[in-house]
Image (cartoon, rainbow, N blue to C red; front, side):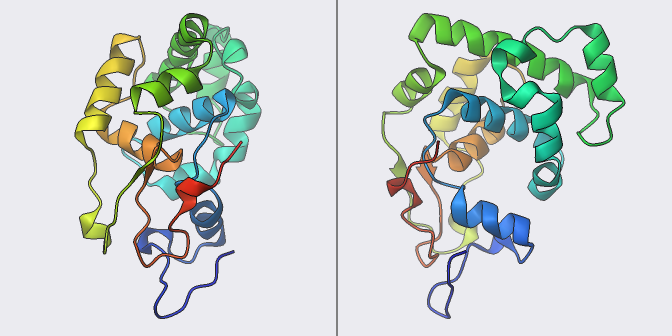
Length: 197
């Protein structure tokens, strides 16, 4: 856990919940180059739509269990019976559209892997190949979406993805280190210089 002082204050959204703080300190903004983890984060960000991130974060382990460790090849094979079982699982967000979209997104994810080798190569190439570093002084300076997230959203929708609006895409970009939006005074600033598997 990162040490904070009066001069270095953690981004306010992290609050003081240990799960949230650990996510902020160890994951948020750290570049991801692992396809399985990229699929996980894209799925979880879509599940968050209309909810708080901490709600989804608390369900993350159950998501990993019931969505086959976020192996897109396995998720793409989920049939109507499996999706019906998921609708009965209180450990995840029980929303039929979100569950259906996860299976459809897994199929689209696999198609991108076939066409580009990896989803990692596709998405990092689309977004410029390196993290963008912003310098917000307060959370008011952090945009909910950008022209780049608009581009990602439009591209993913064209490829067959759902629950990938621009705001969701920007949250995905922040989570996976495509952009470093840590406040300048935050001790996690510079997370873009690390690498997360």
